[in-house]
Length: 330
Image 1 (cartoon, rainbow, N blue to C red):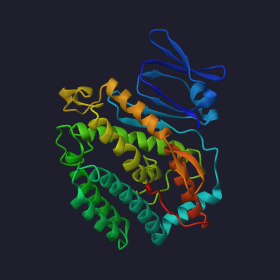
Image 2 (image 1 turned 135 degrees about the vertical axis):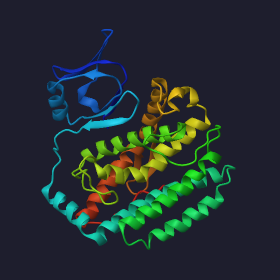
Image 3 (image 1 turned 180 degrees about the vertical axis):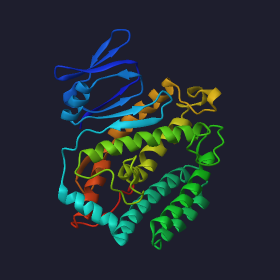
């Protein structure tokens, strides 16, 4: 498993011989050890050139870029090297077959909803009364089985999320009013946190898809679009509750992230650099966290669970084994 580098400082990022070198405006230099670098996240203002991009492509290193305010701008996605025409044809066929597409999308949402339910069960078992919401979500999970279209699935998913978000004021121990999810733009501290963390999960999933033969633009739950890697959105849904939302609850309830980490004048829209760093440190640690995988008989990291999800999807696409989405089992 390679390393991930997060760059906050302004400066230059260039290739020097067979290495990637970051030079800051103050003259400091850091070698990013290209041979072990998997991903680079850019949060600062960086100058670079095509020589570096060619090198990143050779090294199969993805680079994700965020703007000054911490909003995701895009990714440098190197030329595909793990290509399979056979898989691509079958990936498209599965998308084009309504019954098959709905089946896969349904399994993705059932997995995501199960993981949401397990988050609520965790807090309910520790004295936060969210039992009513748990019952409502269980009822909606059963309803997913009867959805016959992507539109119906997305509607049910929206209702599950609405109930889930309604419990956050009870789960989060800071005095923050969270009424509903609002993205464009986020209108309070929690919505800003969710937008930032969801962008991280989206980019991590994209990096893991890149290591497989899947095409990231052919998706099943979300509509394939011309301006996004929609399969990343599909798979991210499954891991948001485990990786992103558990982290947000923990950061807020331990007061590791507070109002002080946001620009108040912007209505808490923008995270300060110190806040972003705290989140990235915690996020990186969570991706490296391991658990014993019964099926594989060995320890695997949370990041590798995402790759395994890609492999399970591939097996379904080539009709080797029906897709069974990741569900928290502990």
